[in-house]
Image (cartoon, rainbow, N blue to C red; front, side, top):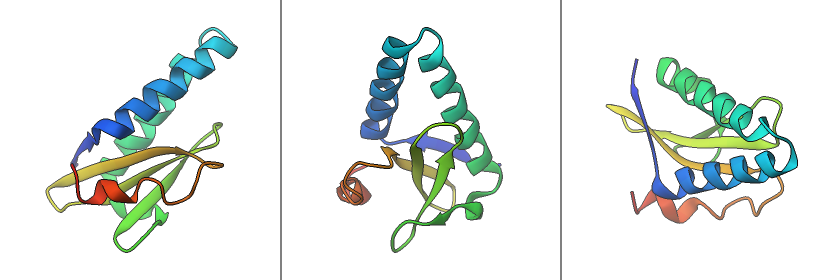
Amino acid sequence: MKEVDLHRAATNEMIEAARFYEQRRQGLGFRFLRVVEEVCAKLGESPNVGASAGAVERKRRVPRFPFDVVYRDRGEGILVLAVKHHRRKPDYWKWRRYRP
């Protein structure tokens, strides 16, 4: 199993989305975080399962929420580049390839 690290900006996106959901309904933000963590754990087990999201990046859908986890397999581990909403600009996260 590979170690999964999150880009700082991806962590911020995840927290921001969790706060939004928590304001909508108590406990929903926690549920969002738990589901994202489950997706990240699965990435560590089988990183090649996700769909292509760029030259070397892949993405995996977050069940029950309109989000994808965008990541890159770096060989020794997985780097999550974005926790992105489906309706946000599709390529806003690509600069993160170059700034860990």
